Length: 138
Image (cartoon, rainbow, N blue to C red; front, side, top):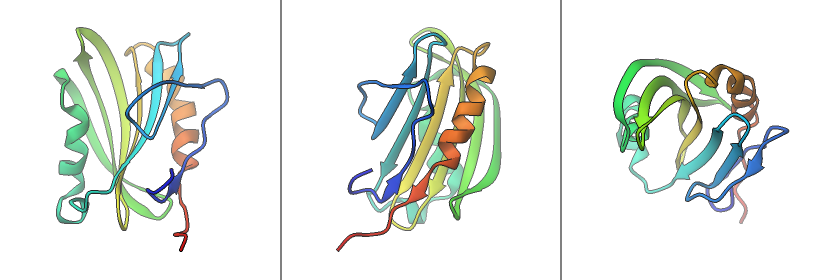
């Protein structure tokens, strides 16, 4: 994404939707979304990955079944989180990868109704695998 030093590719069948995220994609037939966002405020270097990933749960209620595991994507250390919660009263399943890059913290997120999340995971894995840090331009 421009100015944040990364690229990610949209899986086939997903359409861009309006969002404050760098990239938000929807799949209306599943009620699902994919999101990519980089935060380059300089605070990522002094925080642990579990703390960096915690902000993904802000605004959610009744978070359950929280699992966290270390990952590496595009050579960047990260943490994968999986959980269920309530968003605006609706149950959601979330799978997310938070990466700690050299300048920014990157979040890649999949969200869907809990019974539809499994159908989204292959596309989320392709989405995550497409993440690359873009070379800095002078």
